[in-house]
Image (cartoon, rainbow, N blue to C red; front, side, top):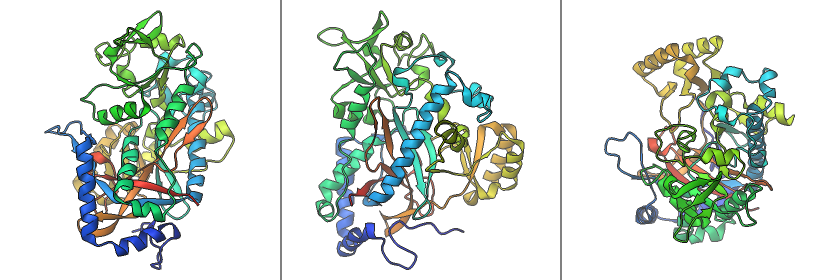
Length: 472
């Protein structure tokens, strides 16, 4: 079995330079002090209400996401290389979306199969020929990245609809600065707390041409029962804008207004945190009580910007992901700076045959799956699980892709038995405005807290870490 790359320790036992100060500190701090600080962090999280809910949970209780107090560290050089690749990838995603909702040149060129677009449940015919402000569809992207050695990062997934987790990135940093000021004194850590300033600047830059010089931005939430409601409330508060539900907005003459105690107030940009299906019962699901009747009419009239645009989900499923290297080359004429994980598309007969013959070696995922659900990790699955997935693949091969089992990098993590390596991924957040692209240095590091586990999702028992980019 491949040995995972340890981000702190070289194979000869020496410490990588980025972790030198942290390694010295860990050797000096008694384990009981670390344990006390961990409990203190948990108390702070609980007191300020940083929780999430798991859909389908029998007790439906809100949970704390476990927080690991040992930071994950990247050098500035590593971050610059990574951020250039992220910017390139999101630029290609925006060009792809503009194309498939207009000229569809990539389909005519045979690069991406037509049925992968037209039969995709996230494809929105209502967006055909629709002009979106500044020709941008993905304004806020969360790109999941994994590392396998000192130089190689792979993109694991593109989140182009309503990526979540940025509140944890910001809260993790605040708690680390409160609990470990001595660590920040020994390391020049690039700040992330300016993310909400960058987000607000991005959102205002996207305002439609009909808006005022000071565009009004709101965060649209499905409400308190949504699993990410804490984040919606957190972001609205940090942005200094109103947190609204569908019932707080109405449409008049194709313009969006917000009900306030001082009367109606025009809204120019809606940072929406609910899915396409629910945003307008007149355009999509008629039974939706979460959206705003007539919102799509205002959108089509060019009087409001929806962030992210309607229909972006057609670009971020796992089947389209497998074509991203070709998509980057087609629109930008460049080689991708970030690698894709090799992917077998089970919709293709030869790919399916290979996957069925190697199920015990591969990771199999649902094309539209998320949260770590509906997947098979072959090397860690028992015979019954493998046979169950074999039957699923034969019944509906188009619903699955398969990938090799990557040896995700590990970082030192404070667990019950002490400090031990645990597998991690990284979700940086890429903001694309009409003026420029903004990426705060770092992102949300998710960590698989169980020994040997590769599943980092919070719904599957994963935790989070503060991510440091050292300012050289």
